[in-house]
Amino acid sequence: MIQGIPLYYFLVVSTLMFFIGIFGFLTRKNLITMLMSIELILNSVNINFVVFNKYLYPQNLQGHFFSIIVIAVAAAEAAVGIAIIINIYRNFRSIDVENVDQMKN
Image 1 (tube, helix red, strand yellow):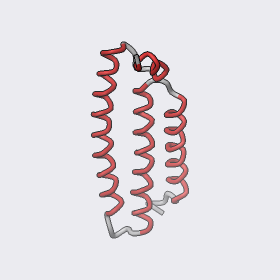
Image 2 (cartoon, one colour):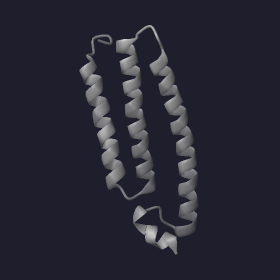
Image 3 (tube, one colour):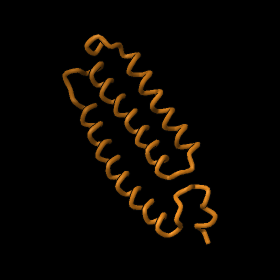
Image 4 (tube, one colour):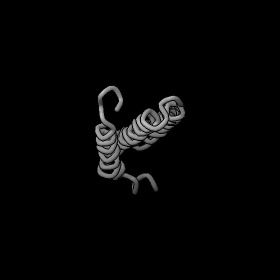
């Protein structure tokens, strides 16, 4: 237990976050909400890294370091993704995924 909170609670929260992110990514048509869903998935993975590190190897910090790496990659992904979305919006005046056919022409 991490200060009285069982591992099960962390896993439930992480699993819910992961599947909410998957659901949001698969059902949304807006690129911004899809990007936010990917961030939600990455944050659920970070929770797992930190919690399993704390439960299995409390004296080591590998889970924390992996989380920092994932956060850095997510920040870079968000910056590049938002830049691409801004360019798509400038050219097509829409960021909906439904308009992919219009973008091909």
